[in-house]
Length: 602
Image (cartoon, rainbow, N blue to C red; front, side, top):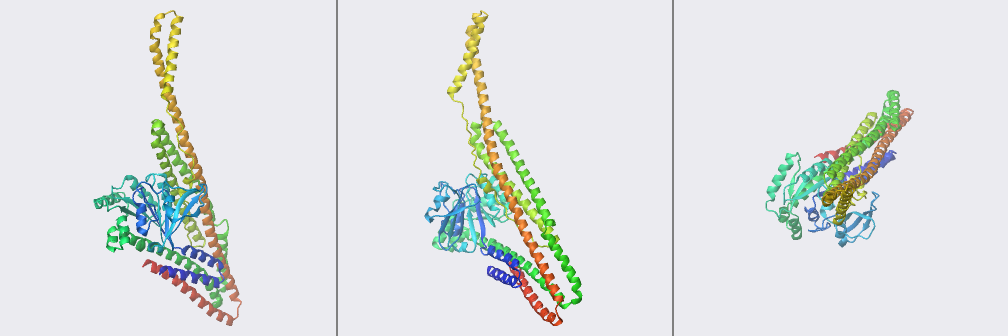
């Protein structure tokens, strides 16, 4: 109902703008109309691997778009949306670009593209899979994204998933009831809530563990102890799937998925719908205000000639202010340019500081042991830690960019505007996906044969030196102890060789670590600079367009008032009636937009 009313309101506003000769305002509303034509709500499903994420997605949509296997894990995201028939596409990338190519795939081959053991002939890298299903839940505008959890919650992919979550409307954090939340899961939830305010915990596999109620009770206490206020819903994907097969409503409620579906549709979807209605009302009201200002200025000139002089002076002043808004020395423009420069410096400093700390901790870890022994643990730790800091740096960039957007908006309002623009921020997975440097350590432990040769060389040198010394001073009794001295020197040579080899391995490990850090820094620095340039262009284009609209509105009002002053009394009377009728129509459109907000907040 609200969607159809939004559509009708925007269409009427576009016709009004075109009728009054304001093609710029009509273009603005048409762009909004395109954005609202697909009012999808994206729900990201995330969590540790093998917790039942894919099974839950399949159960929710009543199909099997996501691969489920006890041994093979999901390796790439699966985007599930509505379609009139089953279709699927592979999302491919060459790894060096954020642009993706959609390649149609056969429905039965979807698991081969999604799982860790996938096979694909193309040289392009598989970044994800998108599927369409004719399901009632999806038809309401819900898009579900099943993310892999390969490597655990501290993995590089898990941290990159946080970047995906920042672009979503809601998130479902999945954890089965085989055990209580781990500290890693709680830390991950804290980060997730920073990026998306709508997070719900879903406890899966309640049909397999009789003590699931106690686990949920303890998990709730764990979340409350760290200040996380989010519900925990208990579900069984198996019961849900069986209920759909049998068309058994009682079993569906027993599975717990019925409550989850109602939360998605009645709470999340309605909230998203309300936000779209408020956005529509704000844009239409802004357009109505500009149209009304033109008409009212001309009406004053027609009905109150004695005020014409002051009116024209006020409109001239307003036009000058709008001209300043368009200039490069306007307050909002200066604030934007200075802010982007400061933000570039701050984001770069934040990332360098994080990488310096990672390098310090990595050096200490390498110096504390032998890289040959600790590398299997060190390598995933380094990748995970760097990924975590990259995502944290992107969160910092997003936060500061939105602060800059608000500040520019405040200055634009001070100068005569009233619009605040919400900006788009790139996510960290783009930069992390381009990191190609391997962390393999190309060193080997000294072989037993090499160690024996080192001992032999040291012993031989000691024995030879001792024998020669004895012969030089004519003391034959020194010869019997030559073997002992040779053995001691052989042990000393072996110890020195071990220390040299260890030092060499540590050096190689540090070089490998630094090469990886340099590659990450190279990709992240470029991506952050590109992101900030995009932010600057978005804000500049948005407020420049608003400034042009305001300037045109004041110019049109000034022109209409100036022409009205020159009309005869009979022409003024007729024009006054027309203007009042036009103002009433614009007011009616504004009132209709206001009803959208009233309906959304009820």
